Amino acid sequence: MDKGKSLSHRTAVITGAARGLGLAFAHALSSEGANVVVADVDETQGMAAVKELSAENRRVLFHKTDVSKRHEIRCLIDTAVHRFHSLDILINNAGLQYISPICEFDEDRWDYLISVMLTGTFLASRYALPHMMSAGRGRIINIASVHGLVASEFKAAYVAAKHGVVGFTKALALEGAPYNITAVAVCPSYVQTALVEKQISEQAKRRNIPPGEVVEKVMLAPAALKRLIQPDEVASLVAYLCSDAAQVITGTAITMDCGWTAR
Image 1 (tube, rainbow, N blue to C red):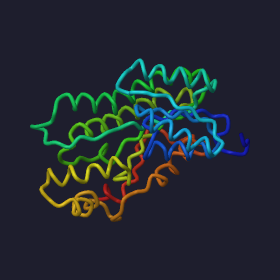
Image 2 (image 1 turned 180 degrees about the horizontal axis):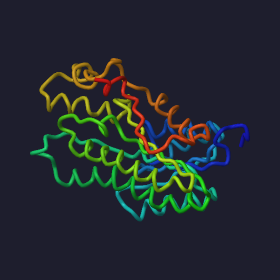
Image 3 (image 1 turned 60 degrees about the vertical axis):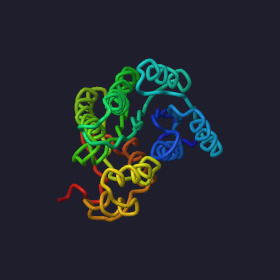
């Protein structure tokens, strides 16, 4: 590994890393020299991601993980430490969406969204913390959303989970500080990923408008900058937050919302 790179000899675990934002994070961190553990429930896509990253001569490992299951999260953390002998960075990114009015919201889907995005973030952090505490340093980046700060219709579970992630991040930062462990919530608005693309047809159905109008009239309407964010833009911020240059940034929610919350 190149000793001149900012994350050389660091090990990062990234959940939901087989595609989209998570894969962009994996590329960004591995390009800075980090060992990367790609965690995802999709084994086929996860192995494809590892092949893609390995082609760039990176030290990378795939671990199939359903973050709604605590034993799988524990196994993920243990495997990362066993393989690379450290755990320096945790990026809690796994997420999903479900569009429905509250009065029709499927109760099992509510439980699942909360378990993946909020409880999964807690569990991964809980299992990672002892390793970081013993090392005397660590970075935990929780991928929240602008919906961790504001709300939109038909996304009750997602909004509740992401608000919870922001609050959990603050508590985590306070407890981690004596051990030089920082915690930050990153809150982007709509990022151009498959997750967002899938929402277009669902939003169109719920709002009774053509799919072509969803981006303009729903997704971009609250923002000052009328565009979607690209995954590599979020990845650049995350890579910085993982570096030594960001060691005093903790306990906060950093927005990348194209001016959504400026009003």
